[in-house]
Image (cartoon, rainbow, N blue to C red):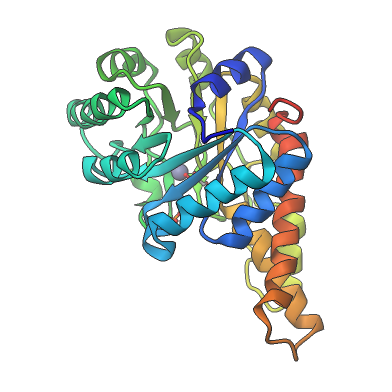
Length: 311
Ligand code: G3H
Ligand code: 13P
Ligand code: ZN
C-alpha cells in the first residue's frame, strides 16, 4: 500500500468515534518501534516530521525510513509535516512526497493566518495533499515551537467556521488547554481541558476533523524509570489518559504524541546503562529504547486512541 492521504482515515475515525495517533519520528529506532506496534494491532498511522526532525535527520532519510516501514508492515501510513512555519517548508514537503502538511499560522493575526493557510491549501490540493491549519495558541517549548504560558490562548469558536471556509483546510488544530513538552501543568495544578470549547467548535463545524496537539500523557511509568536511573524529570506532568480517551471519542480525529516517545526512548536507554555500564554498542542500548516505544504505542492505540483493528 502506498503512503496515503489522512482524509479517508479521518472520515472513518470521526464516524467510528476513535482517533488516529500522529507520532513524531526522528530516527530509525523511533520509526521501527511505532510501526511495529501499529502493525501488530492493525492500526492506521500518521508519522509526522517537524522542521527540527528534518534538520536533524534530513528529509530524504526520514522519507525513505517511512517508505521502508510501509513496505515492511503493509500498513496505511500518512506522512505529515508537523508545524510547518511558512509556505516554503510546506512546498518542500509536498514536492518531496509527504501526503499531508500542517501550516501553523497560529502566531499570526487571523487575517494573515488565513492568507498563509490558503496559499498552502491551494498548492497542496492541486497535488492531492491534505492540509491541517491551526487556530489558537498552545503553550510549550520544542526545537522550533516556543510559546510562553502567557502568550498561549484558547481557540475562539466564533472564528472556526470562517477560517475553514476561507482557507479550505482539511482538518483544524485547536487549543483547549493542552501544551507541548513534558511539563504541561504546574506541580499541584489540576489538569483541565476545555471540553466546552471543543463542543462549541464541533457545533460550528459538524463532521469536521479536529486535531489535538500537545497530547502526551507523560506516562508516569517511564518518568519513574528515568528518575530512578539518574534522570531529573520530577515535575513532568501530562494530560490524563481519560481526558484523551474522551477527546478521541469526539470530533478529535488526530492526536499528536511526541514527548511520550522521547520519554520511552530515554527510559530504555537510561535503564540499560544503569544495568550495563560497560556496554558501548549502540545496538545494545538503542534496542531497549525501541522496545519501550513499541510498548508505549501499543498502549496508546488500545487505551487512548481506540484505533486498533481499524487499518
Ligand atoms: O510539537 C512539536 C513536536 O514535538 C516536535 O518537536 O520541533 O523539537 O522536533 P521538535
Ligand atoms: P507532546 O509534546 O505533548 O507530545 O505534543 C506533540 C505535538 O503536539 C507535536 O505536534
Ligand atoms: Zn504540536
